[in-house]
Every structure is written in C-alpha cells, then in structure tokens.
Image (cartoon, rainbow, N blue to C red):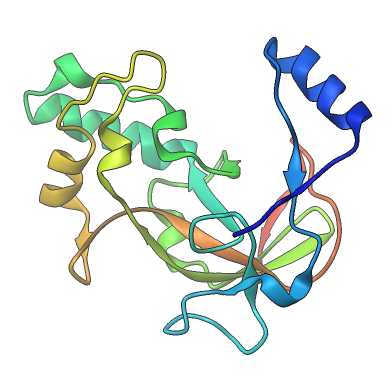
Length: 176
C-alpha cells in the first residue's frame, strides 16, 4: 500500500503531539483501497490502512469479564489486561459483557454501522504495549472461553454505512 504525505503543518502538529519527529500519510486514491474480507463484505466495502475492516468495536464490560476469566485461570500475573492490547477504534460502555456478539447494525452518534463479524485475535494481543514483553494472555483464556468458528474472538469488526463523525461520549444505539 502506498501512502501520500500530508502537508508540513500536519507533520508539525503530529510531531509536537507525540513528542517525536513523525510524518502523517493518507491514502488519496480510492482505486487502490482494498476490499473488506469478501466472506463478510457487501459490494463496494473497502478498507484503507486498517488491518481488515474499517473499525473495531470492543466493550469495557467484555474486557472486565475477560480479565475475570484470566484471574480465575490462575494467570493473574498477566492481568488485568488493558484495552490497548486489542487496539479498538470504539470502546462501548454500559452494555452487558459480550452483548456486542448479538449486534448486527448499530448507530454511534450520527453514523450507522454494519457489524460484519467477530474479530479473530492474533498473537499481537499478547504483547504489552508499554514494555514489548510477550505473555500468554489473552489468547490462552480466549482459547478456553471464546473460541467461536475456529477463532479466538474479542470485539466486533464494523463497516460504516453512512458518512459522519463519531465522538467520545456519543450514544450507541442498537438497531438490530
């Protein structure tokens, strides 16, 4: 994938924000966007630099439930895990643990989303984002409690169905 450099002002702002010399890139040619996984995509759904889907949704209650399972499995020395292990774009609060498994369409603020599929998790989730140390969790516990369709799952992949802006604190509405 090729990225196009943003302008110098964007580089300067991002560099100041993160405290390091960085460059911001974007994808400016819609023709080079990759299709979403064809097994779970509707015609015309694409993704740019994201792994496989435009957004990943997780819930705070599901993370709490997972951390409880990790503690029960005798691996509390690796927990509790922080949400950044899962690299979500959207974190929902106020739902029951694993409620997101049943959602098919949701709205966040002014944007509607199709819930494409559960997110199969990889070994990257076992790496502490602060220290780069790798452990067994969360894959060990997900393998015992959240193995669905041959995948160890946590979170839901979303595809936007409308254009708009979502913000921290926007209400989440379950459409179906």
